[in-house]
Image (cartoon, rainbow, N blue to C red; front, side):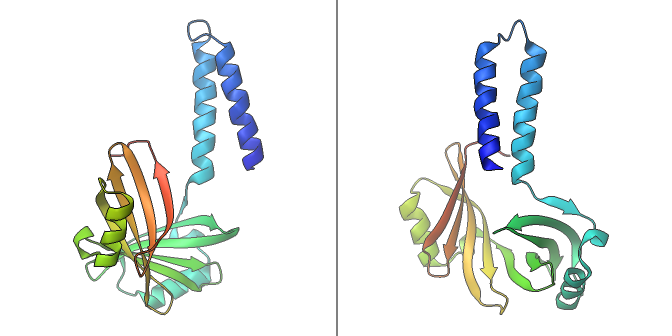
Length: 182
């Protein structure tokens, strides 16, 4: 799919260079829409209703969080496998649990205040991105309930970054989004 998307993107760029905005504004608008809607579809989660979630996932979630409120379900593909995410509130905490199709818990994320990040995580962020501001932070737990890492969203000028750090503060993944999202 990446190869065909790259080819489409290259063809789109070549085609848009060959047309004039004055003579073909509708063609340009349609091509731009097709390009950006295809890109969005390739990277987004799919929202689901509770009825669309596999029974095993729904049952495992209900057993683990019987008092959950404001529940939202989605699915996405990770490492070639479909996983199901459940966003919810439980006892005043904002959480997201990720399950495999068979109902096995993969991880849980808890929204925390940036000031609650441990010192090794804060130091790693400041060292790698000295001018950045932490906008959002999450503590990540493995299926046994042990902290396995942190996810943070940073603003660094116009850049938006998402960092994944292990429990010791080592940055394991960085994703950049230069589009402003407010």
